[in-house]
Image (cartoon, rainbow, N blue to C red; front, side, top):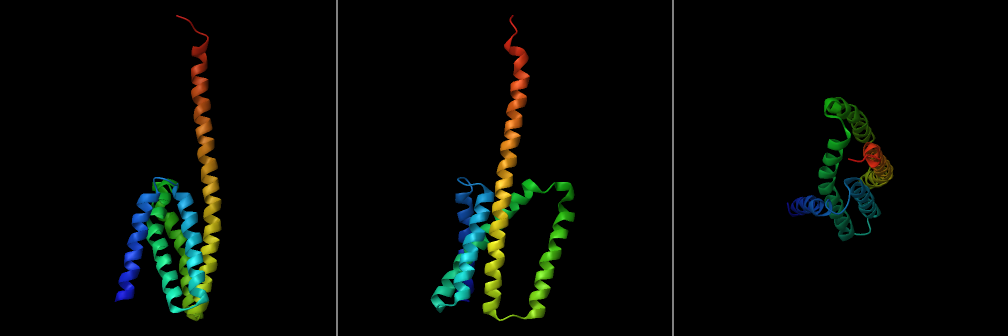
Length: 162
């Protein structure tokens, strides 16, 4: 019970940490950070240096889990159109279910599972970084377009006199 309780405390810590950091960093950048830190934490667990290091790695991972849900909820709300949300979420469940079924059928040793988690989280960090760059570029492009529209709207007023 103590270990589970500790994991829950660290998960809540991650959720609280999100509330603090979201004012300073974009959710896309926070996502890159949690996937990278989560991958490193799984790497610590996979190495199995000793029980204390593994426990520390799992606690760090739980902080990432606590931050993951509000980050993904915020991003999904701004990226996925409301009208298509259910269909898109159901499509994304297919690869997740595929991974779960393969894991259950393969029945890997825990150390192998931690190594696989390490690599999947690393890939997630890379993909999240690509998403972050694209979202920032998209926001900058729309900001530039809005400024151009404002300039074009103001131009007829420049040469007029009363």
